[in-house]
Image (cartoon, helix red, strand yellow):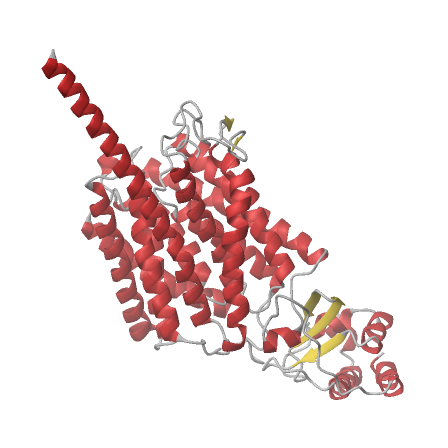
Length: 438
Length: 84
C-alpha cells in the first residue's frame, strides 16, 4: 500500500515537473520570438536609407505595443476561441482567466508565445512599406492586422491548438504549417504586397528607362546583426511550436539552422554566379531569412538532409523573386520582405508535401500537395484581399503617403515637417504657363 | 500611347490632398486631369514635380518643360492620342 502511494506521489511529481518544463520552455521560446522584434528593427534600420532610420525604428515599437493590446482584447479570441464553423473563434476575448474547460493548460504562456507571432506578422508589413508610409495609416494597418487579418487566417490553421476539439477548416483538411511559413510569414507578406501596390515606389527609385536605381543601405553590419538576432529568435519560433519540451526540440532547431545556412550560401553563390553579384549582401542576408521561413512549415518532419535542400532552394527562390519584384513588377519593397516571407513562405509550405517523409504526412504526397496549395491560395486571397481593401480605404480617407519633403529628409512621427519654401513664382507667371499648357 | 519618360525630366507628380495625404502620380496621369483642376492645383501650390533622382524640380521650370512638351505634341498632331 505504501509502495503504491509512493509510486503515485512520484508519478504526480514527474507530471508536475514535465508541465513546469513545458511551460518554462514555451516561455523561453516566447522570449526568443519577442527578441526577433529587435532583430527586425536592426535589419530594417540597416537596410533603409540613413535619413529614415528613426521612423523605421519607432514603427517597430508601434508593432509590438499595438499588437499586444489588440491581440489580447480581440485577436486571441478570434484565433483560438470556440470555433464558429471553423472560420473564426467566438470567445476568449479580453480573457480574465485562463481556466476555460478543455483549454490549453499553458494558458498565459500560450498567449505570450502566440502574441510574439502576431508581432512578427505586423512588423513584416512595416518593413516593406518603410520610407514613405504615413504614421496614421501605418498605425491603422497594424490594428487591423492584429484585430482581424492575422487571427482569422490563424484560426483556419491553428484554431484547434487552444481547444483541441475546435474545428479549423484548413487544419481539418490536413493542411500542415507547423510554425507559420504561411500563417505568420505569408500573411505579413501578402498584406505588404497589397499596400505596396497602392503606395507606389519611393521617389527616385526608377530611372528614365524604368531601371532600378540603387539606394545605399544605411548599414550592412547593422543588418547582419539583425539577421543573427532573428536567426537566434527562430530557435524559439520553431522550437517552441512543440508547446512542450522534448527531444524533438533539438531536431527542430538543428533543421532550422541547417535550412538558414544552406539558404544563405545558395543565395550568395546564385547572386555571384548568375546575377552579376547585384545586391549580393542583401541577397545573402535575405536568403538566410528565406531559408528560415521555408523550413518553418515543417522543421519537425524534415531530416537534416531535406532541411539543407529546402534551404538551398529557398535561397535561389529568394534571389529570383527579389529581382522579379523590383525590376519587372516595379514593386519597391524597402527591406526585401516579400521575397523572404511571401515567396519562400509559399515554397516552404509546399515543400512539406514534397520533402517530408511520406509516413509523416496527413495524406498521400499528391493530395497533401493539393491541400498545401489550397492553404497557400487561401492565405493570398484573404490577407492580400483584406489588405488591399484596408489600404484602399486608408488611401481614400487619411491617405497613405507622406509628403515628398518628408520622404527625402525623414518621416517625422510627432509632427508634420514644415515644407521648404518653393521658388515661389508669381501667380501671374503660373497662370500664363497654365494657359499655354491648356 | 503614353507620354515617354524621355520627353521631360519629370518622373512623378506629387499632389497634396491634405496635410497627411500625398498622392504620387505620373506626368501622364497629371496631364489627363482637366485643365481647371490642373490650374487649381498649381495655383494652390498643391503640386510638386519630381525628377528621376527623387528631387524637387523648380515649379516654373517644370511647367515650362510641360508646356514645351505639349507644344511639340500639338505640332506633331499626337497630343490627343498621347493623352488618351
